[in-house]
Amino acid sequence: MLAIVLMAIFADYLAPADPTRSSMLRRLRPIGTPGYPLGADELGRDMLSRLIFGARLSLFMGVVPVFIAFIIGSVIGIAAGFERPPQEGETLWLIALFSASVGLPFFAVAANGPLLQAWFARSGHPRAIDPYFLYAASNVGSFLALLAYPFLIEPVLTLSQQSLAWSFGFGLLLAAIPGAGTLTELRDVLLTAETEIYGGASPRVVPFADIRDIGSLLQRSGFALPVIDEESFTVRYDHIFALMRDLKAMGMANPLIGRSRRPVSRRFFLRAAELYAERYADPDGRIRATFSIIFVSGWAPHESQQKPLKPGSAKMRLADALDPNRSVSPAKESEN
Image 1 (cartoon, rainbow, N blue to C red):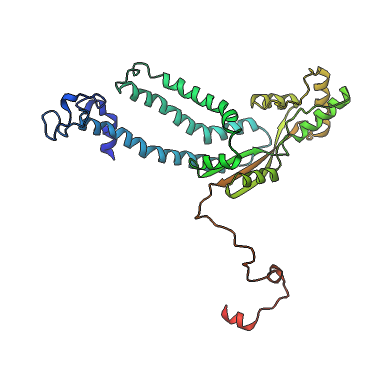
Image 2: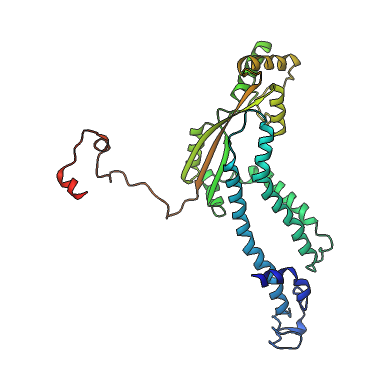
């Protein structure tokens, strides 16, 4: 292992030739040829140089799975070790949680970018003089894929077909989705304030899915062994405007097509702040905001997974099994 690591690091100095350059004059040189101890391939490339530079690929293929497992285990372990958020200082608590669980792995992944660029710069490629275009190409590709997916993939494939396609690359789906109980306080006060001032109401908070709908969607998508759970978190703010500022920073704008396009007045927000303080404030004057998170997990279907028994294969009625007055026969007792 140490030899592979050293070969990968010092490949530029150990290799006697550039492994990417070919010459038909030295095509198929036999082993032991002067200058070519391992010979040359059909394109005239030095086999020893290719072997030395291949250590980088071997190291990459061995380190990446271990690194990914380390990242996933660290995120889950660190997040599980954090206690529930305190009554005060939620912002610092969230920053510490994300920094310890997600920040460190992302920092490690980002640090690999300069290393790969350095390797590419020494590869002899015509574009190696300016390897930073790889970073821009990666970002552009990710952005275009996100934009193209709803227009090119979703209209053509059903949910089951998409699930089957994604299952080739992923065996386990983990998701955290805002549930129906999210921001119920904010929805209530905005609805009441708009009705009082304008005589009608427009949807100001997007509707969130119910846990039953998420479970049904997971089953329809073809995932096996689905597990769904819901947990509510209460975050406290000084006033409604601090809550709205956080929602804006999270990108949680109102994307509904049916929302009102009429600008609202200052009076509307002041009235909403008053209603929020009256209905959902603690004794210390701070208001509450509920975030209901639905946690989802599902596996790609496989024949080795547990499967339910066929209907009618039971050997005992459920009513008999739950009957506390049912006696066991002496023969069955002796068998036990």
